[in-house]
Length: 442
Image (cartoon, rainbow, N blue to C red; front, side):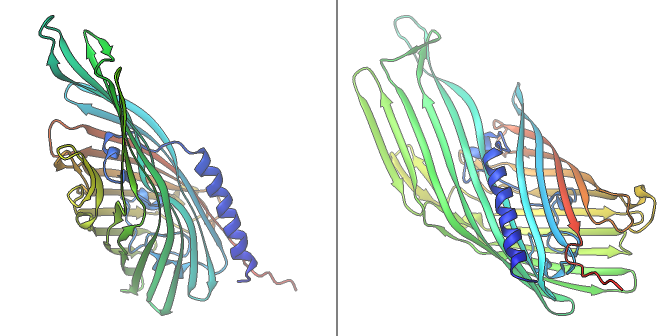
């Protein structure tokens, strides 16, 4: 491929990223995004998200699978691949007798893939790594007026926004038939902002003599992220194919600081406290394994298992007993994730349109990666389903509109914490056209 093609694709991808990054709205509205780096995003494309998020052993020349960079070596030499997707979700939060529903939308990813030379492919992309977004209030009783007997309460308003974005480049090479390996290297950046405003109220009137306390936790992060992956594919017989895949994510400290601000505004004084912590956050070592079985290009079954060593990572916390803002490794837990997925196509090359629709199903489970007030954080499990609809009725059409549904149940170990049920609609476009075919005229 000539140099102008990668440069053209890089400019196109950069334009899409800039347009969607400035226009997007937060993709979550969860009180659990107060902790750690926020809620971890799926980071899947629209087609494998409907398959429960499986990715490690998926290998195709017609799809972008950036979660295992070794799959880049399978990219078709004649085509240009572009995949873009967004998410619409409805979250229902329940705590005891209280419940609330919220809606959110987000731009999730944009990726492009192309072949550099035989058995060597490349991917460029943008996706979300974490999401922070919440706004709620909590009121506690702190005392009683001895003269009037009125209760003194302390309402606190919590708000947060931000999250981390990932722009990456991946390359995959197949040195000999059946075995391939690859690597992703990316730029991870974003901000994490939390604010708590605490006041005192008596007889439903906010008092000013005791002052209002505003606490802000913020961090602006910029670092790199790297992953290496391998795949091995073999034909069991004329109609059955088996693929094994694995990736390792490289953990490291993020060389950025987190800052704590606390201001106490009262009638008699105005105090401002500032504390900063260097190297406040850390990325974990991650290990992902997967296997996929494909029968006659009609049925695909896949399973993934992942282990993320968050328990060894540091995070900034405020110690209310010592008044010190510091890092600790007690805020996180090691995370286990299991994904199951299936895809069925009645007749991939048949003439009737309905026989070329891709039907997808899946399920997933993940243990918590963070702690909430000393308790195990929210575990997640969910179900997925979706379809891949050919854009045209041409038999060899390779571009699809992908529509998926995902239900996620999120609950923590303590009964007093919030339970969340999230229903998502994922919409994506896989553009796959033969841009690089050489035509002959006689």
